[in-house]
Length: 355
Image 1 (cartoon, helix red, strand yellow):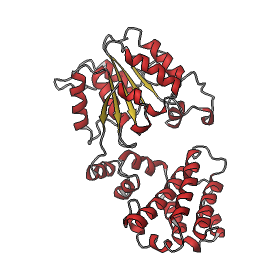
Image 2 (cartoon, rainbow, N blue to C red):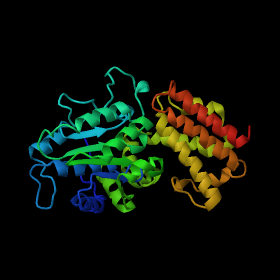
Image 3 (cartoon, helix red, strand yellow):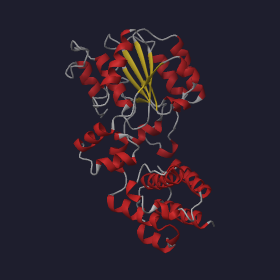
Image 4 (cartoon, rainbow, N blue to C red):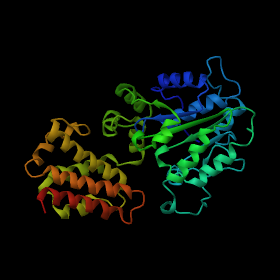
């Protein structure tokens, strides 16, 4: 699995996890904001445990058979359990012949469309996992299960996993990942040791983005709420700079926005998720400015946002944001991207005009 190794803001958390593993803890729940590399951290820990020639400090060698298998996504004693939809979005394959490190997918065929892929971790995946942990390890060492996100477990799958966690197999480590701890079942939290993965310092995250050749890293980082991986993903798969500016120009016009302008400004292949995220940040900044006198995402728009205040009522802002949340939920596969974004902009205009 292609991944980012040894992210520079993780050493303190990795040290804390190392102390827990020395106490033979069998289940950890890594929680924190999305986009800060919790999955990468979990895979780093897995590599250290499965390395067959670890250094004196416990670090992985990167050269042994275990490290090579992890690098090739084929380590037979590592399981990564995720919803099918996440695996498809990442462009990753299903399980290999030996049941290596690729995601456990509940029998989904390669021809299934993304629309049919489950957004939940299903009981079939946990049942297969339960059978796997009863077998001897292939390499004669420990085994590791990485599960992400823990809040995507549906009720039957969660109940099945609880039974496994209550009687954990020997030399088996569960590394669960949650982007929203409040959405994770309390019974699941109670069977794991919670490890909070903090947001990286802004300066360190900015330097890392610069090293990844991300343009305007500080702005990207602000728009991503301080999450560097989310900022990098937005740069690579989000809005081009000229399109971003065009959409912001439409938002700045407020009540002066003309429906006819949208046809020329919004391209046919507009990235829906990126555009909706931009609209959401605009609305959140307006609320923050109105209620607290500050903005988070678009400090350069401090002159434009107050001009909307005379007409845009807070109740209408919240209603528009609710529409955007709905649009975000089907952003991965809209029927017509241009019509979706034009519709959101028309709704924005109506919310300002009170119609």
